[in-house]
Length: 290
Image 1 (cartoon, rainbow, N blue to C red):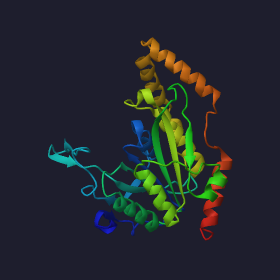
Image 2 (cartoon, rainbow, N blue to C red):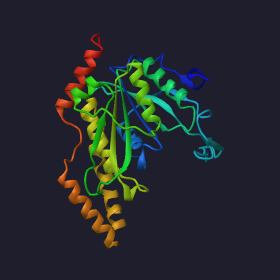
Image 3 (spheres, rainbow, N blue to C red):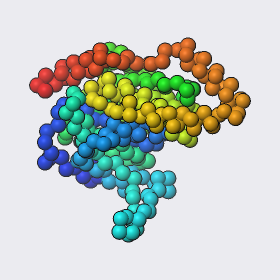
Image 4 (spheres, one colour):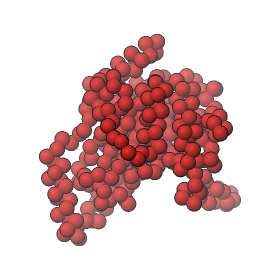
């Protein structure tokens, strides 16, 4: 089995994209509380998108773990919704570039073939870089904007953007394997990951999603709509407070986390115009004809 067997692509008829970057988040081990996949969904909310590719779910999933869903369509006919890994494009005429996006589901098996399909999409759509998003349980209080950590295996990109070069060794998810494959392919890739309060991982945490979107806007130079999340952040903040307010031990633990957090820097990677400018310069150096 190769990528041609699982990838259905339909981008030949679309107008050329403007210096596209591929944005990827996969529900699973690296998407606690759905914070990463929700970031992509918020990024294109109320924006026209076009599906340009789809990865067949059948070879990649153990359906006793990632079960399909049955639903009734508008004609009350029963339909099955399988785990989706659709690739779509969104144009940002008011930003620096267009985006190719995948907010999908981490496969259980045949990771190499799945990643080959991703690489085919990136190359077929002439993406200048890839940004993967993730969310991990962390010792951060729900009352603070969680830090976003950026890393890349590309030494030039790490130096220019002030990002970490990963030193981790041990078990990894498909995103970790994907990053190594991008490196071997010569495709510049950045990983952004955000912390989610480990005591609230069974609940949504829009504050983490908003943190990812804020950094994405700096890096990519496109509007991500993070300011539009204020209402959702406030609503869930009330729910989170209610979850701990009647537990004296939980309250004391949160206060301790707040003190520890406030002693550290609130952001673990650079932000602002300088970050966006350096990323743009890096991409221009990689593609001088763009």
